[in-house]
Every structure is written in C-alpha cells, then in structure tokens.
Length: 299
Image (tube, rainbow, N blue to C red):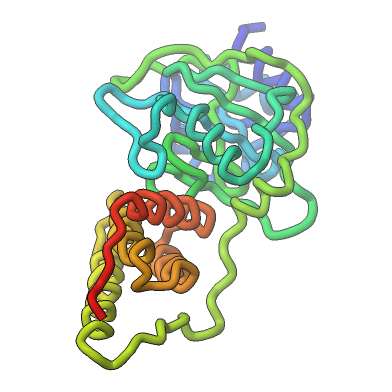
C-alpha cells in the first residue's frame, strides 16, 4: 500500500469524502469535474482511484468540515489596512487580530491540523448543524475574515495530508501536525462567516443642514461612497479604509456622527461585495486613523 493511499483511507475512516487531485497539483483531473458529487468514503473505490499516485482532495461539504486556511504571504506582499500593524506578518497573525477585535479567544489549536506546502496551516473544524450553510471565503478578495485567511466549506475542498504539490509558487508536502478530532467551529465564527442578510429597508440618510456646510458634507460623503462603488475587485477593502479615514477626520472634528457614518459606509461595503465582518473591522480601523487628525468645519 502506498503512503498516499494510506492517507486517503485514513481520511475516509474519519468520515471525510475524498477524491483525486492531479499528480503534483491542486486541481481535480478532468474526468473528476463533478468532484463534490463523486467524492467518497468507500475503501474499494479509494483503492481503485489511488492505484495511481494522485494527490488527495477532501470535499468539505459532504465531510461536514469548515477549514481555516492561514497562509503565508508571497514574497514582497504586505498586509493591507486594517491588518497593517506591527507583528502582523501572516494569516495566523491576522486571525489573532480578528479575534482580539471581536473580543474572542483564538479558535482552539486543539483540532486537526495540517501544515501546507508554503508554511501555512489548515485548521479543521466540524461545520455547525444549525443555521445557514457556510460557503467558501477568500480573505484577500475582501469576502472573508481577513488578510491571508481563507475558509473552505460547502462547495469547496482542501488538499489533504499525504499530498505533495510541485507548482511554481511553492513546492512541498501537506502533513498532519496534530491528529486530534476536529473541534466544533466556534459559534461567533460561524456567525461571521454567514452571508449577510439582504437589506430590506432603504439605507440610512444623514440629516444635514441645507447650507454651504451641509452641502460640503454631503459632497464629501457622496464622493467617498462613489469611489467605493467604483473600486475594482482587490481594491475595495483599501478604498473603504481610506473613506473611513477621510470621514473619520470629520467625525473627530464634530461635523459628522460616528454611528451614521459607520452605517452608511457599512452598507456601501456590503453593496460592493465585502462581508459584514470585514466591513466592520475596516471601518473601525479607518475611523480610528482619521481621529488622529480631526477636521473641524466653520459654522
């Protein structure tokens, strides 16, 4: 029995549904385009599939798993706001910051863990039974928990332990570093990862005076919201941060109400595809930065 077959059978014995990935790669072979449907725990099927040295994919949805992927940055990459703080160097640091700002402990390390080819870590958790079905998120695209924090759940898969990936952006094995049973996903994380409910009421409007001062403030708010709406994918989080910083100066100077600005920017962030959790963090960080340079307006 080959080592990779042993790993595939061990994953299936835990109730995890597995399927082949290309040799040395991270994607299913062409004939496994319906990988989530075909993923299996059947030992006989697994022995037949892994008669060749395929890598291992674990389908998270059928396996009832949510996997946190805490990655390492690529060469030359640096954290964007609000993660551009001393000591934040990778996905694990960013996750610690998310927890700190949420007033929550770091999700337990007492769970199944796999080291990845580039030095990151996969933390496996059992998916919640109740509530909405969790889907994949990508932190670098602004729809997840934060910088270098991805999650894989229903509709997604992870490269399983026993695999060896040889690609231009990184080469190395996926290895079990802690073989405990997966812990339940903490409820607060489940809530953060749930898609925000669609808005059913009109967005809140600021009550501003109908004078030159009010006209300036309306123009400032409209301009920031317009820039956010026009921001390309990959720049939306930073654009939101800059908007919160600019309006935060006016909040600190007494010209705008902090909660009203937070509500308006929060809706703007969700409208362009950012998650509610990432939006809250970014706005809070931007307002705090803007408060360092208060901007007062003449009456």
